[in-house]
Length: 76
Image 1: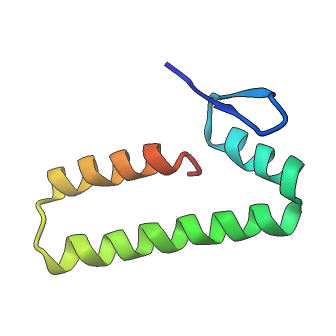
Image 2: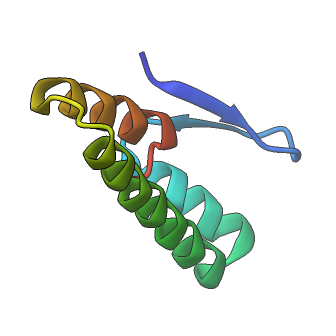
Image 3: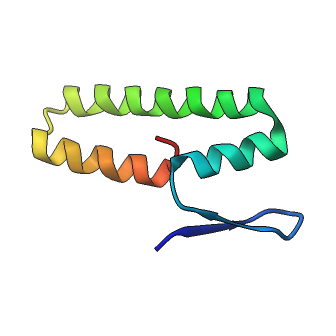
């Protein structure tokens, strides 16, 4: 089921894929903010990889965690 975001102007936006959220950010805040959001999402994923590695998480569990994080930030 797709997620729906309602912006302060009352418009509903349905998030179908990763580009939907970035296009909303770009429309409302501009290209630089959208790029910054992408960079932050990449940093979150890099930090997650580090945490999974130092904690010795199994490959299967690590993939499950990666998938959940990617879905929750809805950018990748």
